[in-house]
Amino acid sequence: MSQKTYQLETVSCPSCIKKIEGMLKQTEGITSSEVLYNSSRVKVEFDEAVVSSALIKSKIHQLGYVVLNEK
Image (tube, rainbow, N blue to C red):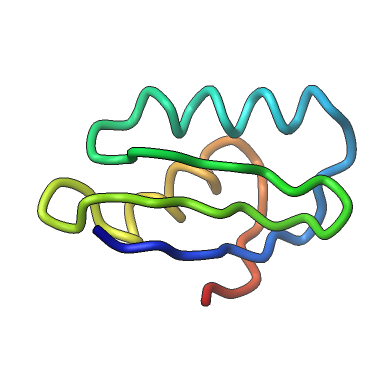
C-alpha cells in the first residue's frame, strides 16, 4: 500500500469535497481518501499494483481540479 498527498490549486466548497471523494471511492485500488478543505489537499491510500499515482492525478484533473504537486 502507498499513501500520497496531492496539493490542489483550490477546493472551493463542500460539494467539491463530495465530488472528489466520490470519484476516488469508485476507483479500484483506492482503499481510503480524505479531502482537506482548508488546505486544498487530498490524502489517498492505494494499492500501486492496481492503480497508479498518475491515474489518480488524471482522474482529479478530469473533474476540473489542478494538482500542483504530490508528496
